[in-house]
Length: 306
Image (tube, rainbow, N blue to C red):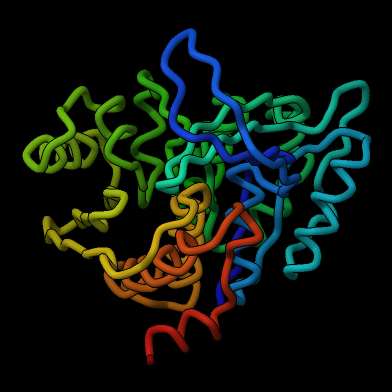
């Protein structure tokens, strides 16, 4: 199996149940509070490890208890965390997540030590870039570091996959040609391209990203599945399983990214990798929490065969 390098955020998530999404200025009463390892980079690396991937993590945590727990949790999934930075005088990144009875969520992120993932740190660990085959990126670390990592990975002939979350309206134009695959959701695609969130806008937005230089575009559609526009112009729709009972969608996107990258690392076609990613996320949304909801590959294959 090919090696995957995840470069991204590591957070401790504070997850609570809310009756509904609060309106501007509205106070809502929450119930319960769980402390759950998270961060888009951490979630994706953990999920890749659980799915049997050969994964290394580049990221940053504070020199505190939360940071120790995040690293230990990733290591328990088989992720190499030996190069994760322990930043001084800054706390580990945190996120406050409110989950509604319908499983929808609202997330507020305090980046903290994630801001220490900079060019200097990545240059110190260029050996990890040289040693991997696939580089997985997100946008919860400084954008300058994301661009540097993508450019270096492209120069080294690696496969570069970007999850453009949280959405950034003005990504540098020179980033797009570095990307073998970009995986926005409907909202992120709209922010990146200005296209409306409807089927026509989705297809137009995907074509715009292709014109900017991205080889392949995969748009996740929440409970509707996902849409793939490939380099050769081939289009494919992957429907979600409508029979599953949705409990929490917090890690749906991250688990999809993980399934996609592990499938690619196994040598699968993009279409087959997207099918695996769909199967993984169909399980994840039935469980509470981010990393705590991630299945093993045996669970995914068992569910697919049942």
